[in-house]
Amino acid sequence: MLEHITCVRATKWSYVVTKDSFVAYEDLCVAIEDSFVATEDEMIQEASSMTTTQSFIGVASSSNIKC
Figure 1: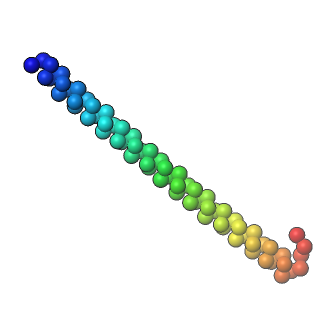
Figure 2 (figure 1 turned 90 degrees about the vertical axis):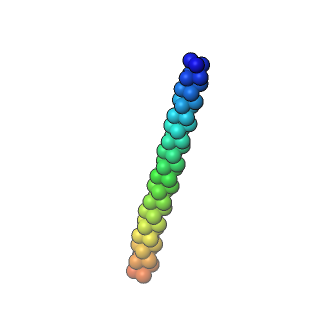
Figure 3 (figure 1 turned 180 degrees about the vertical axis):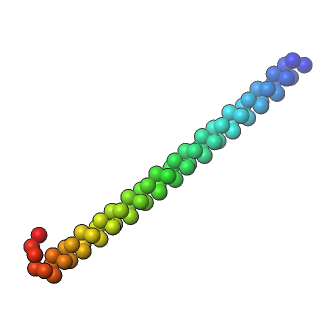
């Protein structure tokens, strides 16, 4: 009878470990998603700064200013 209880406890413990590792995996997915969002933000910022540079070049060209 004692062996049966131990077996049930071990099974329950392995279920908790599996559940914990699933949560860890879920956290990892969230971290990957966050870094993807950060990359997207950087791309948007880069595009904005490119637009600013292009506008400056456009103004310089129309004013006949040599850069």
